[in-house]
Image (cartoon, rainbow, N blue to C red; front, side, top):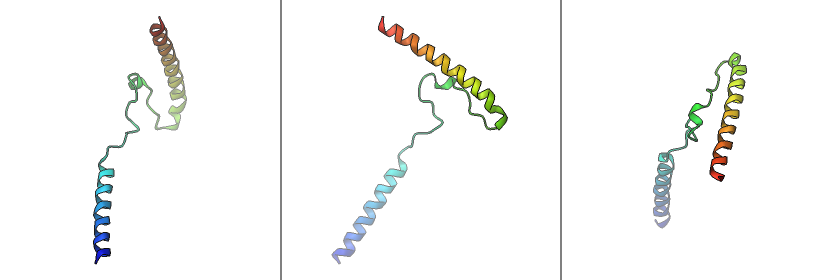
Length: 77
């Protein structure tokens, strides 16, 4: 009898834990990480757009690097 009560208690606890875990919001891979991330180029869905994406991403990274250098320079003055 004790074993049955113990099994029922473990099942109830397991269900509560699984509900708690499934209700937690998982971070979305599409969500913006930083304030400048909204300016990032969109990921291409067609193979022909990859070359343009490469150019856009390189320009974006250069702009972000110069912006970060400017912010660091302002912070250290």
